[in-house]
Amino acid sequence: MTNQVMDIIKSRSSIRAYKGEPLTEEQKAVLQEAALASPSAMNLQPYKFIFINNKSIIEEMEQDVVNFFVAMGNKEVVERLKSRNNKVLYNAPCVIVIAIEEKNSYAKVDAGIAVENIALAAKSIGLDSVIVGMPGVVFSGEKAEYWRNRISIPEGYGFGIGIAVGQADMEKAPHEVDPSKIITID
Image 1 (cartoon, rainbow, N blue to C red):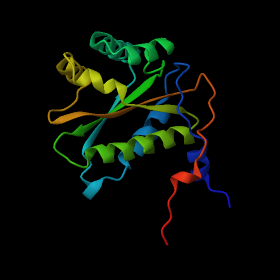
Image 2: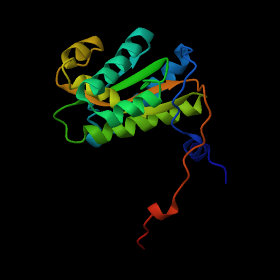
Image 3: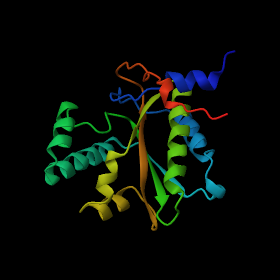
Image 4: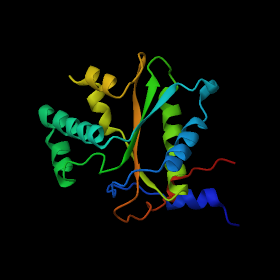
């Protein structure tokens, strides 16, 4: 039996290099629709979806993430970043930040559901993505207020998760499945 949704799920992988070509208005609309269609606990929808399509803002955020870890002296992360040419957002033309209500205890789970909706929708229209948590550091450090204002995170909300989306500039196979992760109780 063929199943389009399962085919998309099984073909998706985390892409860490993008061509940088801007998304079309139609592509953005599909991603926005997928975000808004995400289920949430008690349908409270404790999130705001911030679509960043401005290359200079994306690059500035990426540089501030790198600067954060350098200033912390976290050698392990700094070396990992160096091995990726200090790329965190990988030249993606669109970065979506999911800001979540800080007082909603289900918001992190709801953001996780929403980011997967976006990732699968992206794949379904020929785009690729990588889910990113690392940019969250710029919303907790000394530049937190600057970044909250820079990308219009509303009062009472904080960084939940992000996703970089675009046309892949690399190939990567999906991860291998591990059936031992399944426990069945009948």
